[in-house]
Image (cartoon, rainbow, N blue to C red; front, side):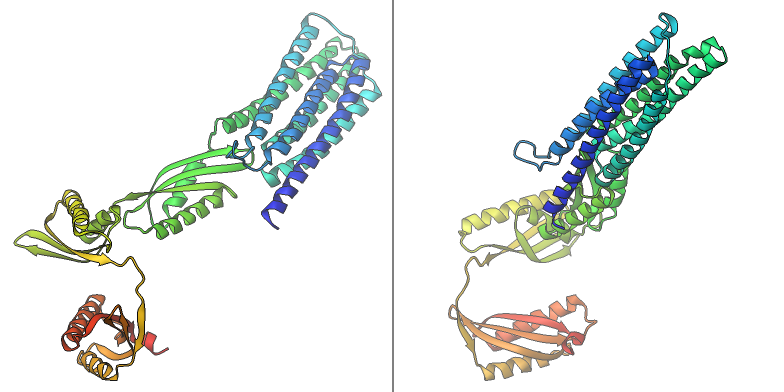
Length: 473
């Protein structure tokens, strides 16, 4: 299923269940108003007022789920999800307004103005039907809310679940009023306003829970404990030195995470991207479908060698250094290095870049006492070759040179070509698997030197070493 189809299905399901909730609220509110007026029951009238506000809340919910599922645009870069949180906030305010009215009327009937209640069979029927409908729609709303993590639908589901309890309290109040008449217990006539006060208490409790959730969402409060969980997961990602910042915000059902992690300053841009993708993947295990932004900051790792520190300074200046050689002479550290620069630069421009590099090295790596930099030209153009050359005499002589090195098992794939009037040679050498890389480099350097000595026409030599096991395939 494509993202577009999934988004359309999500919006359709949320809208349908919200619309069903509106229809149910219209029926329930109308029945409660009629029965409440005919019986004079404050408990039923308070429930009617509660249901009336639920009707308004359901309409707001329907509007919010339709708006919140709209994709992000140039004005709302984080999408429209906050509309759900705002609608839940409005529902909370409406519920609290209902509570004030219920408490006011109940207090007046308890202490200042007695009202005769006339419980009827219709009152019990309507309240029972209300309980059945509230049970049905609260379950449907909860299922879709959990499926799509919708705070607006969850608020509706929570309302209707508490309606079940408050309706039950009203029925109990009417039963007690009837019992008071039958058994001539005068104080039971006050059971109805007392039931209304209990309904108000239930609504206040629900409103407080909902208010905390909605205010947290509107103020971008992170879910409890999630930040520490994210830090723990991200810190275990290979390549992350430390987690420097974690910010989380929520818009509707979608989470947005902004994370800064420290990586080794010698890490390449490609490796940094790979580590960032893995960090985002770990966060989405805790917050599915979250929009994650990972910012990588360069830091010196604890295990950096002197060579790593030299390369880090060069990388910071967008320069590539190689063949770094460090010597300790009479307690002083001498560094020799090769730096590749654009061949189109003048000597003055190239020398100025190297001078800046050496100054930063002396500042950032104070152990170094002396630096000597060999400037090399980095090709900026593609050279045109005159084609491959057949040079059997040269091949035999090269084979003889390489065979004189005991580390070399065989030499193959020799290629001679002429580029820009110069002779280039490339060849593959098979060596033992366990030969240290430092020794491999020494052997390569010695072979190149011998080839240049015996074949002075060769301008450049490229030797590709291969392990013995790889050459047997």
